[in-house]
Length: 530
Image (tube, rainbow, N blue to C red; front, side, top):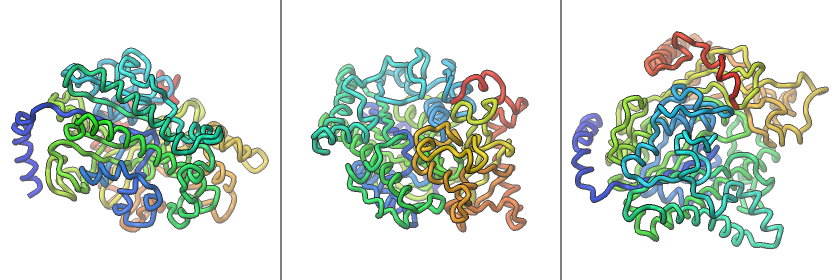
């Protein structure tokens, strides 16, 4: 029945577009390191968690009036490869030097959805971060030509700036209003620049949820009680005061992010544009500076929020379809009535979004592939990557580690208590140890308890070397901490998922399994890469 409904809807799509008075605007809200933290996800989680504590009324409103995706995943849990994938509508490994953080260079031959929409008559613009390098003339959003942030960029470091203003005598409400005023000014400048009723495409990409945060700002600014997190942390985060304090600060930034989203909603409403705007909210990977988050292929690193509201999208829906964020590029093009280039490996979500059903809408969307090569420069000797790929289905997560002799989160840089860097150094310097995990109080706490019998398993899970294959039974192990790949009872599932993953990678041209499987170990990749 679902397949028939989708087929009919796909056939009707040209008629639907022809009947529309004008092409919809597109506003894409994309937060750095946000993960999946919004109160609208609390009911979807199925178990106690951080979403029971965080409060995001503006994001919740978009979810209630639109569609919220349960199974949205990034192609890579690292900012530049994820963003190169999203902009191009392709797997990150197909964007070459565009998929590394330091030394990244965009190939202008790779089409990107913003420039395709621009060529089709859209007014395009951005505020804050899009693709990490961001300034070259050949950048995928046109470099700084389309940047709108003359009103200010202090929202990017919300907790630090708001705290400084409060210490100088301002109330928190006044400080928040001033920082949000910059967000509003940037967006207004973008909207005022369009010609007449020209449709627009805007990317709002603040970095406030990226480390670092002002310590204790979650409680001081947002009244988030760290003790309210007790019993709600995943098992691989130590439920201790230092970690709860750190996570409360992170959730404070998530609430500031929600406030910024609310500014955009209010401005669109004021101008009468909200109901003709495709409004999309997501983030580039999971939580930073913690075990199993950013740079990991388990859900804590790859499963992100995706919430969509817009014209011809029925509201109040929870969608179970598996979505890769590279699907957004062809989706935006479809709404803008631009044919996606054949090179795009992502698939438009337009039929799913315009369907009225909840649950599994498209019966073919039952899995996604994710992966990673390199994050920060020099995390491993010789600037070697950590090549791994994963296949995520409803029932299993299968991970293939192509170089299990390497350190997944970077080299330790210490051998024991005698040469262990101080807590403060690990908290403040990403490169002190395990450079593929951001510096943070949580990272420092876990590393400093590496030999504590109560927490050693968390340290080993986060930083230890990993076997060539990992398999997690999601019904029994939703947090993905027990690898059953070597269990004979799972031999059939492991073999089947391995075959599916490798076949998919070969089909889409992943060089890791192609005729030059060591491409990412060779120049020019070894000369840059952060």
